Length: 434
Ligand code: NAD
Image (cartoon, rainbow, N blue to C red; front, side):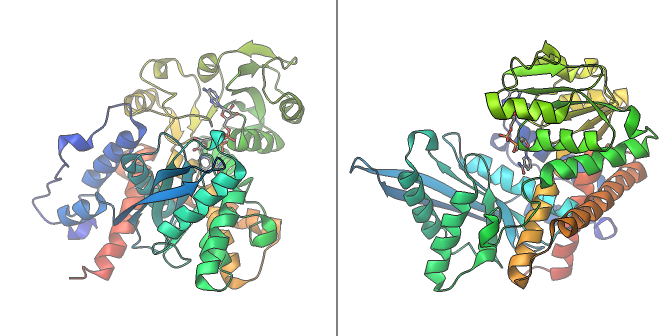
């Protein structure tokens, strides 16, 4: 877009109420978007378009509870941008869901899909509810009625949900079934993250952690640091953290620390990740694991190591602890683990950050593979899935790092620039429908 930018360039900022607190990860994301847009000298008209969601749908969801009472829940589905293809993004069931948050997450998905150059736009959905106090039957009825409420947006060519906070492959199966009943035929490609037996993809479960492994490996290579000598600390030992730790250890790295919500463990000589996994499988939490020293989550972040892989929560690397971070590389498995203030400190320290919209994009990439397989009715073996994922992650890493180097910006801003440029380019080519 740079070549066609309208002069004089002027970014029009949305009114102040759009801004949430400085540490809000979504606003931090949009402030990075603004900065990248300025760097790209983005056309002000396109800036305005990309700063607004395409479509926001809010529905009331009446559900017959097991008690015989009726409760009415509120659900949202936001399609942020579909210029590059069908909207893609998860659905969460959580009391903290708001339209603002869902919109910001949908924007996030737009940039994430564009960074890895898969032909999807960005979406997100959510229902304000507490599934921990609902029975499976109530959750199923909620899911089906919500699906029915947003059915006009859904479809393999328009909007493809996936699991997110408190939703899983069971919920995806209900969405797929509800949609298919309305269409009078089975439509597997309307959701991803489905059970394998009904059109899910091999390798999907491991994809985000595997993607983290690929980009960590590439970052080490780029900095001329042999993986065999890399000490890695991983925060979060769930889907992303435990898979990334396992695969990085397989690559020869030393996993010196891992943590979960019960705290962390540190072993300078390197942990046996499989043994830790077995412990967690049995005891559910890391606490008490014998073969290491107990540490706090805060201590884990500032350990002496080559790579820090936050894979739990947002906002864990802040202006308070960023000065003490010793890692040379931070690979963001979690969404939004680094605040904007901490970004500046890490940049000054010369820490090489692999930003979330690249580092954890392995999941959405294999969701894309799932959609492709469903549409083709032809399923790939796991090796094919993994090698295609590797190709996309390695290439995206190169593109982000090169963009950052070319413009003298951080990898995060480089990733946003790459994403915005890709989305903006399609808008420019498609023109404006009036
Ligand atoms: P998960 O629920 O499987 O695991 C989360 C882990 O974080 C658990 O080990 C939990 O104990 C730990 N944790 C929770 N609270 C903590 C705390 N206060 N301090 C330290 N650890 C804590 O979740 P996941 O799927 O591994 O996702 C982790 C992060 O990665 C999230 O930010 C998620 O949005 C992001 N992400 C996940 C995927 C995916 O495909 N699973 C894709 C993209 C991004």
